[in-house]
Length: 157
Image 1 (cartoon, rainbow, N blue to C red):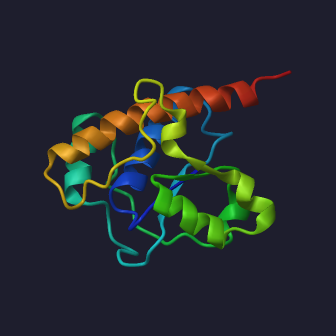
Image 2: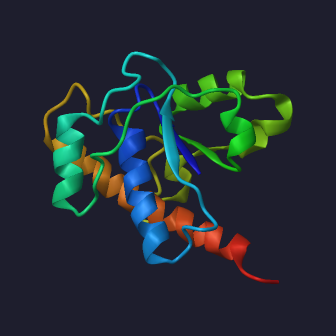
Image 3: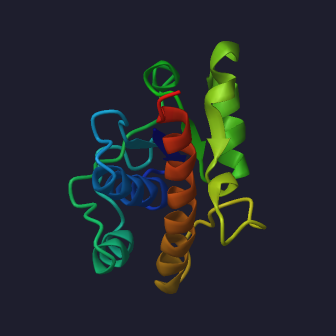
């Protein structure tokens, strides 16, 4: 499972942190790999934004080991699902992916249950600190829906 945003310092590492915790709690860490990347290279090698770190830590998610990286074509081979935070990311990913891998691209908010009307996870980078809490609300909702969806596909038939 690869989560993708713009610079890989706010939304996607937060999504990965939230989802990783759910995967661990479900005992599925041997079956589901979790990572994140950015469409751009501006922050490669940097840690998560300090506001994202703080907001996540207040809810029990540790993003301290995160280091930003840029999305690569090989990611579409490595991961079964590559999740965009907004439409711009989805378009970038669609241009980068080989035609055979295009089906792997999904939108994060398509898995939301409580926030069904939203299409994108808003970028909190240029806003106030409350934006990071709002992003966490959305990501917790969508991550729970995503795990539910994956559990159905992992269940023995």
